[in-house]
Image 1 (spheres, rainbow, N blue to C red):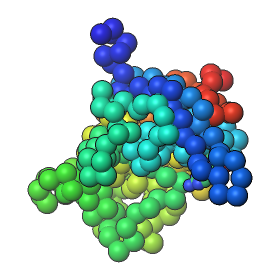
Image 2 (image 1 turned 180 degrees about the vertical axis):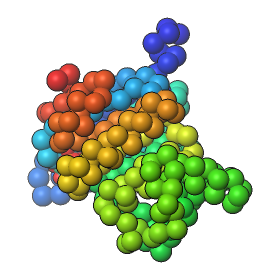
Image 3 (image 1 turned 135 degrees about the horizontal axis):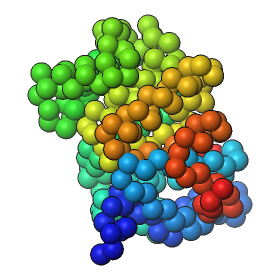
Length: 231
Ligand SMILES: Nc1ncnc2c1ncn2[C@@H]1O[C@H](COP(=O)(O)OP(=O)(O)O)[C@@H](O)[C@H]1O
Ligand SMILES: [Mg+2]
């Protein structure tokens, strides 16, 4: 095995995803996507609305199964796993940040960040310690007892980032993480994402329309006509 292959956390080869046409021909959304992501590397994915960016992230996150091709996460072909195995890999190896925070509304910030650690088998005390340390790191150490409805949009997203990181994943997949935020708040969330990337060496795949966010990544790729190309 080459050095490059050993350091890759994500290896995507010939990835295709088609949807069966209901009243017309099949939709070929992804037509052969290739992507190699190294440990700790940040890649931004841009592309027109409807080009398949979310479809691609769902496949990278084992939330969907490819029509053809492979997604190797740390050498494991996650496109062929059963539902339970996929859920286990998602919880342990992957972190997700979406445009809308998807936090549990009846839980505090602390509890929201603890949940993936508890699912992973961490003790309540251990999960609390890790979650509280991460919330400190994202600048919300004084808000841990607040529920999502008591936090601003940017604060909610920073809780979501802390939650994505609590199990020390290999990759964080972020789909328009600042799409719902104003400029200043967006910058804070970007700072948080990249500071944690630098500290923990987690790789980042960020789908974004935000040029400033895309420019922070080591590589910017454009999804168009079903394939990824360098920008
Ligand atoms: N479950 C589905 N069934 C049929 N078509 C879908 C489905 N999900 C997404 N699509 C289509 O796939 C295309 C890409 O969608 P999406 O990945 O959400 O694009 P993006 O995130 O780049 O805006 C769109 O044309 C969308 O309508
Ligand atoms: Mg999308």
